[in-house]
Length: 346
Image (tube, rainbow, N blue to C red; front, side, top):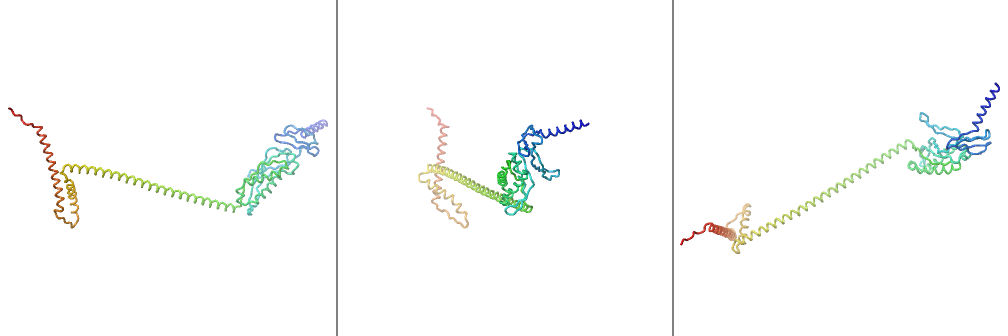
């Protein structure tokens, strides 16, 4: 029984020594190994052998920002001997910050960092996550304290860049490389939010009114341009129509003049010499007599200008006689041709 007890103790001791002597480090992880309380080396990823009770891994502080089933965010602190070399996210609750115009706002920020030097991250700072969080808070208060509320709400990129520059400069001695700093949310007080909503609504209404006014102005301009164009087109059409009517009237008058000239020529050739003018004058006189007699209290004594009337009648008679003679002569010629005289028998 004693032998079994001793054997069991030796087995447990061997297991304990093995757990303390053999360490398997994962990928992208390192362990800080101390020998007799002083830094000795870094245990890289893979299988590592430690001297029991002489070489021990050094633990560092870590913090986790988690949400429970109810959605409430909680910060969990702990210790670990394995230092993660991957990029990590440090999230912490929002904090109140006072702007330059004395407005208190809640800002929620998040930091992305990576441990570049595990030895410095272990020995240069006592609690790395808490140090980064405190540095972020103070830097954020200093930057926002120099800006007014409107500038703070519209300058997230500027704030992120300035915070990253300040935090990265201060964290170089801690063996940490800060990759990004982001502001997740900026929440002004409720009354400020209501004022901003009213201002935004008024600005949108103003833009809508300006847009409607611009649209009305453009519509009026287009309508005026359309009226002007239609008037121009109408004037051009009337001008073209007047030109065409004038051309038609001129051609008609020219045709009438040519026809009248031809008629006068034929009348002059049909009448004796010097009678054509008297004939035309008398015809015009006869045509004007009904017009002169249309008015009331108009009395005309005949013969009025009897010489002209008699000349016209005489010319008309001469024209008729000449026409009749021409017709008669034509008839006799035709008859003589149709009925030749009988031949005399000798």
